[in-house]
Length: 124
Image (cartoon, rainbow, N blue to C red; front, side):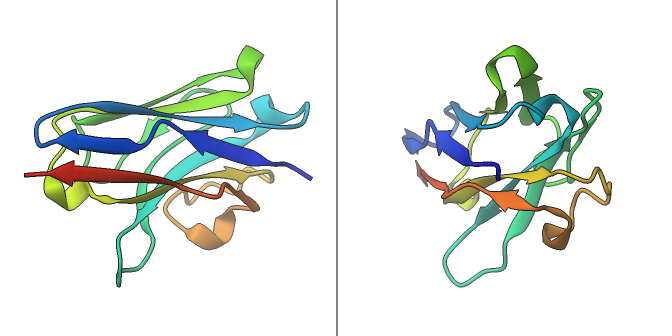
């Protein structure tokens, strides 16, 4: 069983930055693809980005150029650096682990483990 714990959320003004962290339990973190998703009230969970076990990164157009994912396998941690935040980025942000390396990073169903989420609120 893998446990994921996110942190780093909070309230920020438009144009500001936040860095989210996700710490994973277990010894096989380095072999997992890791994803970040977000969910705003009344909306479906949305793909924000992913990083493969080998370090390749993938982003949707809505955040590309503003968000950056990285990982530190020695610390079992994946990061989401968010810059130029806008009110529409307000959501609960979740990290997730694809333990079977399925790829198709945007699919929530491809992830086996999820964190509890951390709230990000961007004020205008």
